[in-house]
Image (cartoon, rainbow, N blue to C red):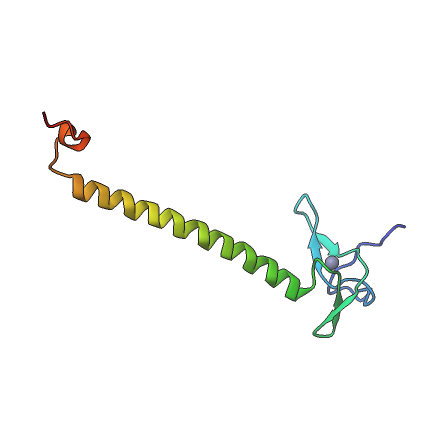
Length: 100
Ligand SMILES: [Zn+2]
């Protein structure tokens, strides 16, 4: 099936299809999402991928994953800072416990 490329503001905007305006892979222009609109949100239909609550859930899941990762990085940084602080002034031999 050949789809005519449509703009969100085009008067040919297809109400039956997903309302999301997607950009072309090359970054020049775009068109209305080609999938059938199945989920209604604020007066427009969306496909499963572009349905705003799904988009938000995906964004949040990603943000939470990164927040968790950065918390681990911060904890490791703090650990290294404490090690440097508590070990300053000691010789390498003292650090190794080699004080014979
Ligand atoms: Zn879509």
